[in-house]
Amino acid sequence: MDWHSHIDAYCERIDPGFWSEPINALTNLAFLVAALWIWPRTNGLPLARALAAILFAIGIGSFLFHTFATPWAALMDVVPIGVFILLYLFAVHRDVIGLGFWPALGATALFIPFAAITVPLLGMLPFFGISAFYWTVPILLVIYALALHRTPHITRGFLTGAGLLALSISARSVDETLCNFIPFGTHFLWHVFNAVMLAWMILVYRRHMLAGAARDR
Image 1: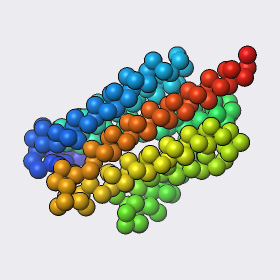
Image 2: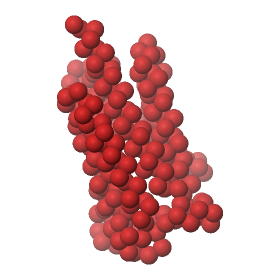
Image 3: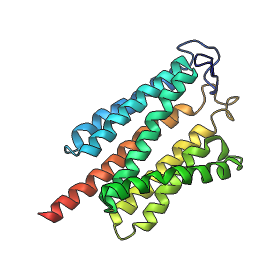
Image 4: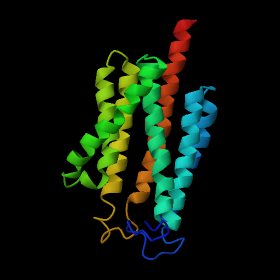
């Protein structure tokens, strides 16, 4: 693989230049703002702070991809997203469901076969195929929301997050389809909605942890 080859995947990009995607690049500020906003609201919870730091890294990685637009930059874009998903799942398994460390780690690892089965199936669907991997997350959020129905604040939080993410993924998926109508595309909305959604999910986790601490007093 040529790690420095040019990737042209979005409406806004018309040449290999660094600032060929100014809107897509600059809207990554939404991730940085969300991370800085959520950081003092983590109440010192280690996993919440780690998630906030990863949220900041998502903004940096996505900025690199929408400016350099190369395979190495694409890797910098997707790795923090994957780490956020896995760490959040671990937090759910350990701190919401109540599994021990190793069982929580094992349950989190099941995301890999889940994605391996689900992504090819979604890939066969016209609208869902272009963002097949990302659709696994709102699907999981709905599954967990239903499974945790006895914890209403988690159910509401997860369903809200799933709705926000579905809106975000939809904006990502129609970007190239609407190029003739919206020359700068809709991918920038993926950044904005995602930043809001990820910060919201950290808040959901924080509220659950604080509610548990209050009950233990």
